[in-house]
Amino acid sequence: MTIFVDDTTKVLYQGLTGSSGRFYGLRNHRYGTQVVAGTNPRKAGTDVEGIPIYATVGEAVKATGATVSCVFIPAPGVEAAVLEAAGAGIELVVVITEGVPTHDQARLFRTLVRDFPDTRLLGPNCPGVISPGQCNIGITAAEIAMGGGPVGIVSRSGTLTYQALHDLTRAGIGQTTCVGIGGDPVPGTTFVDCLAAFEADPDTEVVLLIGEIGGSAEEEAAAFVAAGMTTPVVAYVAGVTAPVGRRMGHAGAIVSGSVGTAQAKIDALEAAGAAVGRNPDEAAALVAEAVAALR
View (cartoon, rainbow, N blue to C red):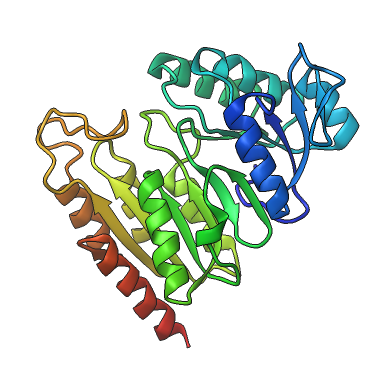
């Protein structure tokens, strides 16, 4: 199941005819992403600035060869939209929509694992994935990204993803791929999934991992790093001052007692050998040091 995308990736937008889907779909199309189709059963046969609209994902896939779908469907329709895409053979479904109920997420993830093992879900509530200079799927501003590697980025936070891209680009450090996995409680793609992909990618020589409070995803990532990951990992964990029991930002960003605290995550990552910045600027500086050490 793919995570990475490039200039050969063919993308369809479920929700291209809506305001947000149209804005970002056309923006990414102008960037150079192969946005080959949109879907809307009520507008089949029309187009959005030359991009054809089909009634179903299956029809769009058959006509265009699309392998990736980007979902801008309102939250109540996300589960059905993802399953439609999976049933049509889509390899990667990127769900930008926020507010998808947790029980919908859990049921959807279980169904994908059981019935559609060849389809990867990214999100919900994520900014998407960008390979700078090649392909941008989602809502990331491509202007702040720079291609050429050698840094791969994976993040739970959309805003901090954008800051990391901007900081590295401003420092002249290119990126291979940047993946926003989203901060909801049941993400379709995890830190570990992305770390494994970056470890196997010959173009990614340093990984920047951006975490936040809540859940155990960062601790699981630390265990993966400690188990033998050879690519250097730099990390930043947001939420050091977050109060216990209060949701901070994403639905999954909540500390319960001693579980999910930023300090516990920092300790686990450092014990695994990752360099951990105490703020975004320090994390960017640590990435620069790691890149310099490669040369």
